[in-house]
Image (cartoon, rainbow, N blue to C red; front, side, top):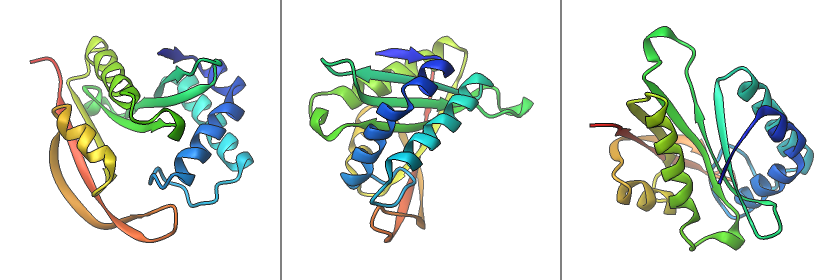
Amino acid sequence: MERWTAAQVRRRAGELAELLADTVAGGASVGFLAPLAHEEAAAWWRERAQAAQAGRLAVWAALDATGRPAGTVSLAHPGKPNSRHRAELVKLMVHRSARGQGLGRRLLRTAEEAAADAGITLLHLDTETGSPAEHLYRSAGWTRAGVIPDYAASPTGELRPTTLYFKRLGG
């Protein structure tokens, strides 16, 4: 598990694009419709590099045995003075070939620990209602805040409900 700099995200945007495209092709609702073109996914990651450069995003990558990204997780930091105590957990993704091995849980734990170390006391996220990710978040102690119907389209374009979760850190 490595925290990547903006330069690493930019330089490895193509590899990250492969992970993102695989995640979307596997049916995960992470904000994109299938099929996701490689260049669109790479451009999205290059934009994330700009956010990381500005300090608004922290990105961690888990590498497989060949050194390619098998999973990622990010923390998005709001820029408002009244929200410096919180962050949003975004784009927890695990390549289909690496699922079922605890990688998602390790990525989640890494982000939570880094947030606590940085003085963040509240994390929040949203995920597709009924998705496998919901089990992960509940079992890791996240609290369900509610459901928004028809919030986002699945990779196939079907409107799906989204569940909001939060977790208090550090006491």
